[in-house]
Image (cartoon, rainbow, N blue to C red; front, side, top):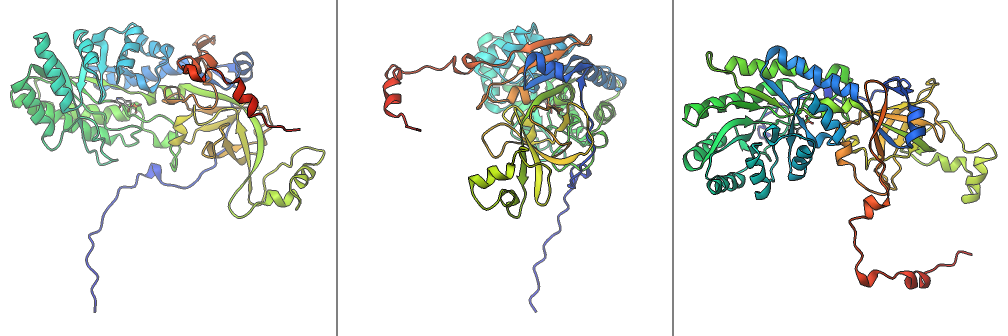
Length: 495
Ligand SMILES: Cc1ncc(COP(=O)(O)O)c(C=O)c1O
C-alpha cells in the first residue's frame, strides 16, 4: 500500500478580531459634528468637505499621554507627520507638547516651517539625502538610521564636520502577529543590529544613543509591543555591555489602532481595538521589568499617528445618483425595463421617475460626489456611512459608490442606509488618518478641509483646489502651443 508522505502540521494564528462574518448594524443619523450642523457646513463650504474636530484631536492626545504617564512618566509623543500633515493639525499636536516625526526632507521642512526646532524633530525613513542629513545633523535632529548606506553617509558627514553624531538605530522585530516590517532597519533578533552598533562605535564617529522600532500599523494585538519592547531593551543592554555606550531613549514608533473597522473584521472597534492603557501596560511593563534596577530608565518616544487623528476626521459628501446594483446571477434590471433596448429603459422609468426599492438579486446603491481617490483608507477599512438627516428608519443594505469613472471606486460594499435621494448629505467616518496626505489629484479637485474649534467656530484649514493648483506646475512645449487648427479638423458632426 502506498503511504502518504508525512506533512508536518502548521499552526497559524487567527486573530478573532479579523475573522470574517458580515455584520450589518443599525446606523444612526449624524446631523451635526461637535454641534455644528452638517447641512450648514455643506451650505457654507460646498462639498465634498473634510471636517476635523479640534476637541477630538486634543482629547485623544491627552488620553494617550495620561495612559503612558501613569505607568511611564518619561514618555514623549511625536506627531507622525505623514498621518496628516495639514499645518493646523500639526500645530494642535505641537501645542499639546508633541515633537515632530518626519520621514522625508519635505516633511522636515514642513515641521521647521511649523516652528519646530531641529532638536524636537525625529528624522525617520529609508531615504534621506546627503543634504537633508547634513541639515538635520547641524540642527540637532534625532536621526534614526535605517540602513548600511545611510550609516556610511553619516560616518562621512561626521568626518567632514569633525564631530561625533549621536543617533538612533532603527531595528525590526518579529512580533509573531503579522509579517515583519523588515524593509526598515536592522534585525534586532539575529545579531545584525548589535553588530552594526559595534561597527559604528569602533570605526566611525557615530554614537548610538537610541533604538527605534515601528513594528507595523493598526496593531490590534497590544501584546506585539511587549515583544518589540523586549527585543529593543535587550539590544540596548547588549550594546552597553559591548562597550558601545548608554542607550538613552527607546523609540517604539507608532501603530496603535484607531477605532476604524478593517475589512473582514468581525468584532466592532469598541471591542476589538485596544485602548492606550492596554498598549501602555504591555509596552512599559516590559521595559520596566527588563531594565536593570538602579540604572536610570531610558526615555520612551512614541510616534503614534492614526490612533490620534482618525476619529477626529469626517468627510461630508452628497448623493448624486441612486441606483439598483446588480448582484451575481443575471440582470433583473433589464427585465424590468422590458425587452426593447433604450426605449424599454425609458418606458420602465415611467412618469414617476426611476424605479426604486431593492429586491431579488438587486441591491440599493448610491453614487456620492467623493471617491476613493480622497479616501485611500477604504482599501483597509469599512468606514461608517451615516445619513445626515432623519429618518433613519427602513435601513437597507446599500452599496456606496464613489464618483470616479472607475469600477473599483467603491467606498462601502454594504452600508446600512435608509432610502436615499439625490442631494441627500452623507457623513463618512473615521477618515482623519492618511486620507488627506495620500489623496490624489485624480479626475476631480481635492476638497476643502475645515476644523471646528472647541468653541464651535469653523475654520477653513485648506481651501478647495482650483485648476491652477493642478496645472500650475505644467509646461506646454512650444510646438504644442497651438491646438485650434487640429481641433477644427477633428470636429465631429453630431447633427
Ligand atoms: C516610522 C513610523 N513611525 C510612525 C508611524 C505612524 O504609524 P501609525 O499611524 O500606525 O501610528 C509610521 C507609519 O507607518 C512609521 O512608519
